[in-house]
Image (cartoon, rainbow, N blue to C red; front, side, top):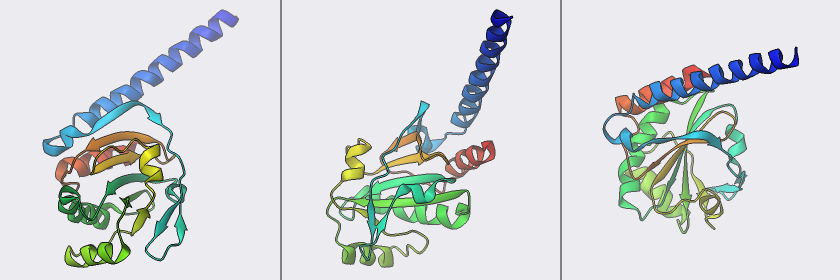
Length: 185
C-alpha cells in the first residue's frame, strides 16, 4: 500500500512539474523583440527583503508588494539606457498597475533625490514611485552587475525571471508575458 501511495505521489508531482514547465514554455514563447533577452529561472529564487528609502528618506521593503507580480527595475540617473527605458516602465504601470501588479524602479548607488525628481519631471514619469538603494545593498544581494537590470518577482516575492539591459516594457510582447503570468495565479 505504501508503494502504491508513493507511486501516486510521484506521478502527481511529475504531472505538476510538467504542467509548470509547460506553462513557462508557453510564456517563453511570447517573447519577441527585446523581450527575447528575458530569461526565466528553472525555479524561483529568494530575494532579500532589504530596506529601501523613498524620496523623503522613509523606509520601504519589497515585502510591501507581496501578493503582486512585480517588475523590479534597477536603474541610475547617470545611466543612459536606464533613462531610455523608464518611460516605457511608466506606461506599463499606467496600463497594468493593479492589486495584482506593480512596476517598482529602484535607483541604486549615488542618485541624489533632486536629480531623480528632475529626471522624472523631464521624462514625464507620473506613475512610478521613487525608491532608492543608496548603499547598493539590494543590488549586491541580487547580483546586479551593470545597469539596467530588471527582474520579475512572483506574488511570493521570489525572482522568476531577469532581463539584462534596457527594453520596451510596454511592448505587446512584454504585456502578453506579464498578463500570462498574472492569469496563472
